[in-house]
Length: 335
Image (cartoon, rainbow, N blue to C red; front, side, top):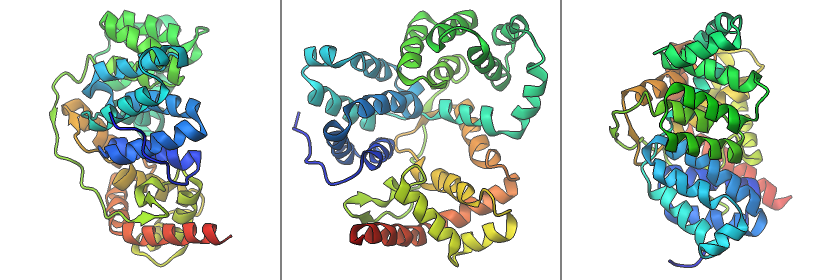
């Protein structure tokens, strides 16, 4: 295996963003640059991020690789026995980038928290006792209803998340190896993603390669690809605000159609859907494809027709957003 690529100057937040988006795009070279940067600036952040990426972006497409990441995330002493921090991090990150991808668990989480129908479902389920909700977990064939009940029990019960995940997946009949993986992932990530991956193993059995997502134009900005500068990076969020204040078609549409509060967040979510959340080498089935469609069109807080218009205009405006990114990064360099 070749050694680490020399890190280019970037903040730990930029490096974390580059890592995840490069893995999504199957860009092994940039993945290694991000790993090398984080190994220098913030190794704990690197291992937390790799654990999240394994469940969020690979998940059902390669559970054995997710398991390898969880094993390696145990600690420095264990990684030393496998060849050392650098060797293990570079190898696993490259494997994640090369692997088939699946974002069904993250799409499902977005639906559980943002979809309008979920709020109506919450009113019904939140009146139930834990025992009644557990019956929903074990007996309801509808994935969204079952997942919401699982999430509420995990949040409301007095158990740590790994223990709650184990109990709920055992009750759902998930196979022991996936329960073990979910328990470890819940402990490492402290998110609902591993639990949702576990549930999805029972619902998304038919998987096949999907066409690669259509990636918009990219440019290099201060050594970084433009897609690494999204709303989760300070400079990326500033660029989205600058775009919002400009005269692009998407900015005019958002200003005309939506209240002032939340416009920047709305544009940031649109950027995620048309650029930074895209995958190369997607492996998914009908359930995952349905979840993706719901997440993209129905979880923006606007109606589906408006969402279609917004996403098309945002895709067309990526060159203008890149110009804003360049201006922000150049202004920062001259400060």
